[in-house]
Image 1: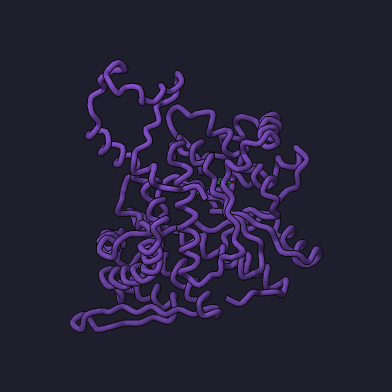
Image 2: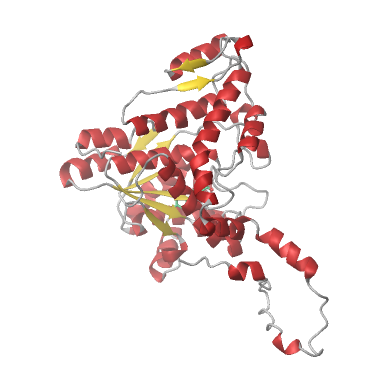
Length: 405
Ligand code: STL
């Protein structure tokens, strides 16, 4: 991957394919006047399991690195916890490490050098006295209504909203200062938090940052939705080829409808940009479908617009589109699956992050009855947990896993 050094070319690459840029002048000033690398971060809250949608921000990280930016990935563990405890405290550290493996292996799989990419775990600085004091300062400036509104598109909306949902946006704003960046990047769903940061950081003596927003790309579910409740609407990064084909086959894909079509969106927002990055050339596109002879034989496209046109007119139907896209996804995920299969540490982190409940259950079934503290051999019993604290059940399997690096 060749690095771009011309400031105008850098700016063009930094903002390529974005839906919106706020305060782009801040970026131009760093490039043209200060003449130094742009410092930028992307935050992700390690809640669920990363899926194919992760390729979309990864492509932008590739653009930023190619433009010579200093890129930081924030593994926002406390945010995952503050968002209605989507990740329980016991697993959030492991999930953050799993996300780090996924980000690294996706970027490596698309040929992006990651030596310069920095990873920061949120709790490593968000529990310091300075950061805590900043939360209190900001809480004296931002109203309840403004913080609630800022989080509306990001924090899970529930019937009885928790105080944590109001702290979440304040901390995301403060992360810009504490990570020492010029720019924050995210999906356009982050817009309200980005605006909250721009409007309020100056009131606590910090500078206003630029904000870069990716479009929301439709998924594979009904109406292009990706929902946690529909496992078929998301393809896990480590999904097997068999499951990939099954999920793509069940994808919502109305004949003739290009708008909101998750499969066409994937070709446009993932497959084409990756091919451009790999070829180091704009506008390249190469997509072939191994269509059976009786339905017209193999087809290939060198332009996404032509593919859209054909899908619109019916010259390309859902069955053939699905077959071609499934094949492409299998091809994209293959090197990542290989990295996972050949790295025991990666595998251990996956277990600790997502299979702890299962491991616990198995152990529980095997556990002998509690015979009380006075039977012979009871001396080794662990001391009880302090009141109000859940008893931590560290299983044998997990003790063997060395996760701290
Ligand atoms: C999600 C889903 C998603 C992005 C985020 C969270 C972002 C979290 C975040 C947290 C702290 C930051 C920046 C971003 O400073 O797509 O659940």
